[in-house]
Length: 376
Ligand SMILES: [Zn+2]
Image 1: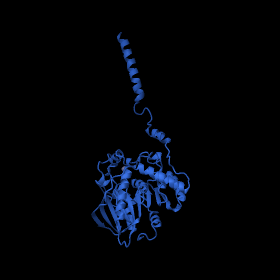
Image 2 (image 1 turned 60 degrees about the horizontal axis):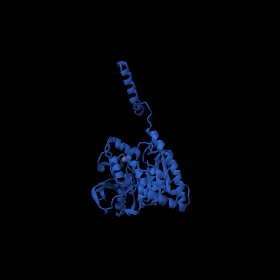
Image 3 (image 1 turned 60 degrees about the vertical axis):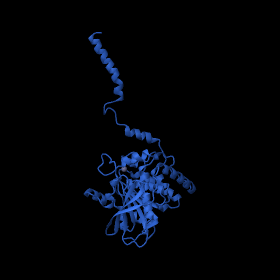
């Protein structure tokens, strides 16, 4: 073999060896990025098997029973219960309420921090609202924003529904959601706020639990506490939440029938157009849920308990079109249940925020007139 022949053969063998590699591993930018399209395609044929369709009241009640069972399973295993134990660690008086910082034992190794707001001058037991915060952490939700930006956010997004409702005569309990602030353990990487949603979610999934289930478990222990208090009417306890707290407020009535009404803000839309398609914290993920139900079915499963849906029409992460569709479906569900007025919506001109346009009216309507010493 002369030198020329050897070189040619070497070039041919290099080309043959390189060809499959070139096809399998194109240089960056040679083909369009397809991962998002792939998941849209994978999800295309996934439709909820238990989606609500028009039906009679007995059929609807049987459907609710079935959906309740499925959701309870999806929300995962729960911890072992422990007797109610509460530590009172701080008391601060404000113009219209006293705010206590307490810890409630919710399982053998966990004490949930709670800010407990009691309006001044309560003459008889009043309704209480469990308030659940979103992904800004507890501080801006209880008017304890550490920075000017936090305080601005509290004002502009009306995050302070716990103290606000206390100012209007309701007892409120703002739970520090597990994995947030002082309860954040393994800090989420790339996030400045104190949170460990990734760790909470991954470890929950690995042991058959879910972050939503565990956080609702803690909220149920808050109800145990509320029902032990003289100033609280044990039969009139509700939930309010925005964003991640809104998601919990949507699931909480599934797991606890002592939750007599829910105000769900910045969280209700469809799974497909919000959590599935737009970047959200991993703690929003409830594995497999899209195969069974949509968000409107979750709420329908506990109709006719009163629900106020609060959505900014410009919320970029929970699209309003599907919120409106879901609301229209829920109006039919509540009609079948014989309580059409128990489902309401405040679709306000704004973004990802709370709104008090209808909250007080909704509470007064469903917890009865004069239920709270109004200070309006
Ligand atoms: Zn999260």
